Image (cartoon, rainbow, N blue to C red; front, side):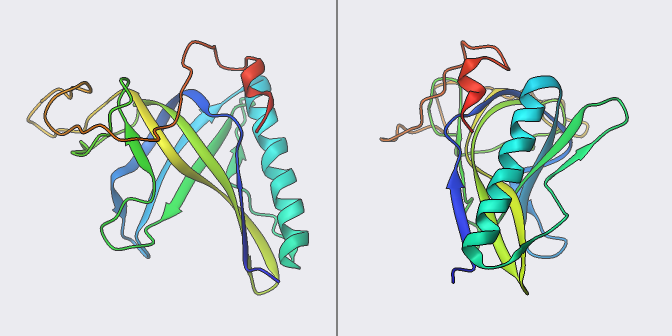
Length: 191
């Protein structure tokens, strides 16, 4: 039996406002190097994502021959909002395991120190792993498009620019983000 299962989501999530600490520039190295960020969603979009996560965990647990964990990459808040955590470990030292894009779909190579309030579009995968007979599910970003950057600059106050110019190179096979549809639209029906 496999120790993991990856299921790619069919749709991206649009206009996510990142909260708290954002580890996109470099991984959090408290334990293993991990890239992570979270966002708060409400309403139909949140409920559809919860249903998709739970379904991916159930089917992944069967495929990996394990029982589903009670841990989830989301937490319901008292105000009925839901905080979702996206997380992926660094598989190869100093190599980001997902791609970053600007709004012109140009790769971002020199990533600023993004912080809470940054707005992104995200393509992701459900990653179900088996550890000691228990299946765990994670939301792993595969592509992130930065729509609005909030940069932690300390006292410097420099503003980021996400457009063509230094630090960008064209790349074949970039994902297609359709930012014209509002959150919770019909495009969000297929996770």
